Length: 143
Image 1 (cartoon, rainbow, N blue to C red):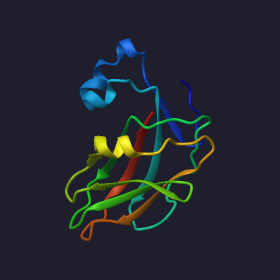
Image 2 (image 1 turned 180 degrees about the horizontal axis):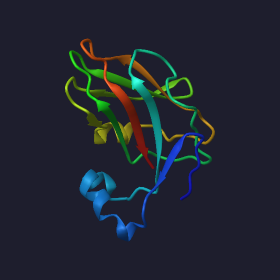
Image 3 (image 1 turned 120 degrees about the horizontal axis):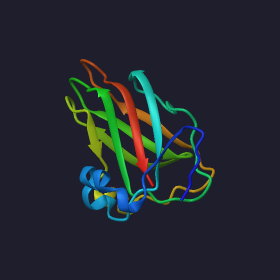
């Protein structure tokens, strides 16, 4: 599968070469990933809407895994990122204070609607750390 985005994209190796990916994501990688949509919010984070570059897919796709990661952990409170498809909330991920990564649960993946072609995928931040908000957020939607 080939996906193009206005933002970043990652293409993963052939299914027979996916050992490292399966080691990172376990059972979620059983079906394999073909690519990822990467949504970045650079710098020191703050509460706000539509914070990443515009990104959309050329064809419909279902998420196989979703990960949010920061370079600098939030301190004093959790960091909450909401991922939207257009104006519809698609998924909420919360990075606990002092942590740098969170993966969507299997239940979140199973109930997430298909990302439809041409729909803008965006990130809002609804909570950030109180002592330090966190910095350099990347949201990876593995397809």
